[in-house]
Length: 251
Image (cartoon, rainbow, N blue to C red; front, side):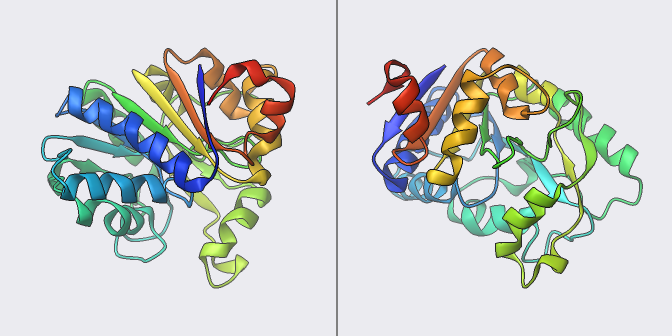
């Protein structure tokens, strides 16, 4: 595990973009596991800027997204399909035929989960998986539980996740209660995992996830066993780790 320090959100985003770009440059047809939320937005902006400058190209890349809300169409402005189009896809040269996101409108949830797992398998797995981390330790929408769910599955969102996401909606009542999420198995099988975190609110859970016991009650803790994990975080998010484990942080 490498923990890369940045002074602020912009620095964290830059560090993460460098990690992602290096994978794309070394393997132009890389399979990118992508994530949504506020944490990766700055990284996506940097990647789009480097595309415009001719530094990187997404033309041959394939992508698989972590999750999608159940019940939202790809055109809904709160769907993760919409988020990805607005924050990355429309700003780079990726072929939308190579983009894969769970369908929030699938009538048969079990069939959709099986389909998505088959898509990931057909791509040969993920070269780099981008993750954020929830305040309760979730990755994707793999919420705290008594086991690590392996495959894509439909999940009931916890109250803490609903509260965290309500800022994106008109009201808490508008936040969907269910989502499809990639399971732990393809995340852990990724050749590289890149986790981004920013802000003081992530400080306690980051230390707990990466220096506490591996437990499904803190889903991100499984990443301690990842083949190649890079954590990009800012000073505020690393404040607890810097205090307790300063030797583990690269400045």
